[in-house]
Length: 305
Ligand code: SF4
Image 1 (tube, rainbow, N blue to C red):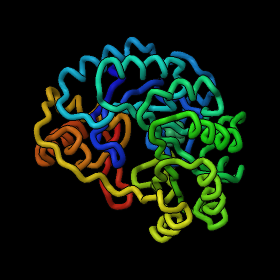
Image 2: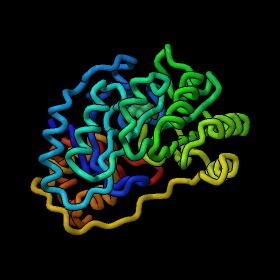
Image 3: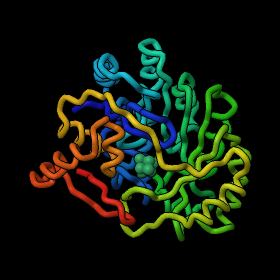
Image 4: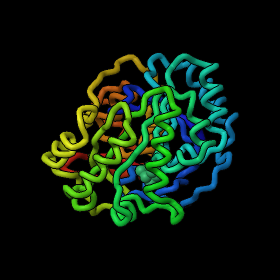
């Protein structure tokens, strides 16, 4: 199986070619809003979960064919900083291409000097930070028992000092979990200390690991934006277009895309450069073959494996 997916249309990174640096689903957290599903291996163990050479070979082949990629992004099915070869991989990607590299991370391991060293050559780091109160952290992110918010804040502050690229910190706000005024103010104070370049406020716009969670109200997101300061923005839906992608195996490409995260037909269309009408036929066949499922989330139909 390829460790590379996409390019997927990302709200933050344009057309982002994703790299899975750990297998499904190895993570330090088990967030209730995770789009990938529940964590099966909750761990702090750093090792070569996937051999770097396998990832780099896949990437080289894909870069030779792809026309437009805005970012190469470590993200995927778990926490990429758990791969102890992350630094080596970023360095070798930099030798291979001038496309910028982003790391989407849950930000839990930056208190470790070796993790900060590993990301130092990336262009953008997008860490998450959703809670300050231990009980809210426990309910929302369901962390490994040895992780603490204090470690996270300390690690992110050190990262800010040492890392020369951009830090775009994401705060996911979930209704009735971390959307109280008290928690938002505590998050705002921590963000002030961490001082990222941008703060991106997000909510549950896609199907998540737990079905009973809901997005925060737009008024809450607006309030968070005010509290978090002038670098804060509410992430808007990705709007872009792509017409000339070459897709050899449409059904295979759909499955590769949606196994990473649930997608609406519009997302699949933008990512693969295929008209929605053509995709609909392929999606119907895949549904009949029971290779994919459809889920309705807040009135929008998403496809997932
Ligand atoms: S959202 Fe990210 S950090 Fe949270 S469980 Fe999923 S992969 Fe891990």
